[in-house]
Structures are given as C-alpha cells and as structure tokens.
Image (cartoon, rainbow, N blue to C red; front, side):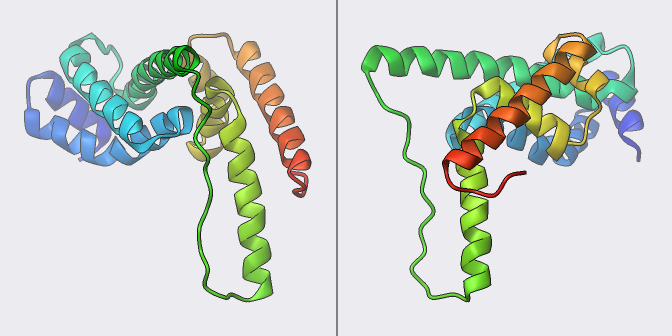
Length: 184
C-alpha cells in the first residue's frame, strides 16, 4: 500500500494505517531530530511527540502526498524548541557541551584508521554546527529533499533555504579544516 493510501486511511481513523506510516518514517524522523539535538533520549522524545501531534492533526493535512514534509515540519518545530530549551538550561547551569568521542582500541589496517579519522572529523565538525544548519544539511543531503520542500518544513522562502544551506556548508568546511580534515 502506498504512503498516500495509508495517509488517506489514517485520516479516516484507521489506527493500523497510521502505525504503518510510523514504521515507514520513524527512522528518518528520529535521525532528523537527532541531527538537531545530538542526544538519543531527546531525539526519541521529539520523534514520539512529532508522531503524536501528527496523529492528532492528520485531518488538517490537505495533500496526502505531502505527508513526509509535513511530518518533518512538525519534527523540526519541536526539535528546535527542545534545542533552544536545552541551550537556555545549559546556559543557566553553566554546563559545557557533551564531549563526543569514538572509542576503539582494536588494531586495524592503516586505510581503515584513516577512513575512521576522516569520518570522526566530519561528524565532530557536523556536531559543532548550530541546530538549524545541522537540520538544513540533514534535510538536503541525508533526506535528499528539494529546497522547496525544505522551505516548507522550516517555514522560509526557497532563496533563504539556498543561502542558509550554502552558509552551513561553508561553516562545515571551516570546522573540518580547523580539525585538520580534508576539504569537502
């Protein structure tokens, strides 16, 4: 059954159809929330909240073909709220950001060591981006959405999306260079 058919059935109250939509999209929704929040528990909470809100408001969705961008717009809104709440809390409490490291003591071939180091540099630089640039890069490059779709999700014009994605890529390049990594 297509996503459109599942959405139409879910709009008529079919809970099982909505469950199938969740199964199809839960990984993408979680990954998007995680790209913004960088903590598993927070991303899980936001993902669940997004699906609950989508379930409650599904009747408001006019075009079933737009379900995924609409769901990501809900996820984006809640994740940005959570990121801002977390930033305010950490500022009040004087906490530093989490130290994200990759562990592994097993010996490995040199090419694997170099590949992992490049990957660590990339992800470390990606984690240093502010939530909005991380979210935009996630939508554009991991989810493969068009600038138009991203604009719908984040609520800004296409030209603004293009410039923000461009600035996010430039910032990511700078962070990678600072970490001694290879340019994108």
